[in-house]
Amino acid sequence: MSAHVKTFEHVTQAAEAALEAGMSLDDFVSQARAQYFNAKEHKAASERRQARADWDLIVAHLHHSGAHHGALNDSDRDSVWLLADGFGVQSLRFIREQCYDWSHVRDSTPGAIKAMAARIREVLGA
Image (cartoon, rainbow, N blue to C red):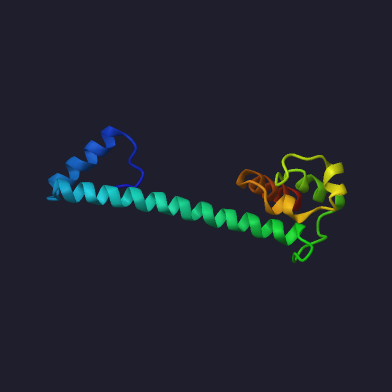
């Protein structure tokens, strides 16, 4: 049975095939549940890996100790900082007055982190 069974018709067809192959209904349901939860966990693990990759990219390019700090020109760096929302949505003037306070990036929402990483990838052509 596919982990991507989405419609009642497909589930019914899969159940009928399993029963014809000698599988009990309880075994079919158990297998279907396991595949559903495995697919759900796989998706969650994939999202966690992507979030970690996004964060690592941001730290590498924006943090003063990052491996690629200084690789972005000032305009591109500022365009990434403007996507941070740790202090809420802020102007470039505010960010500069705060001396590019890392907390603004560090405390950003997952959506802002994703946007910052996407902007860095866009600038890098990755």
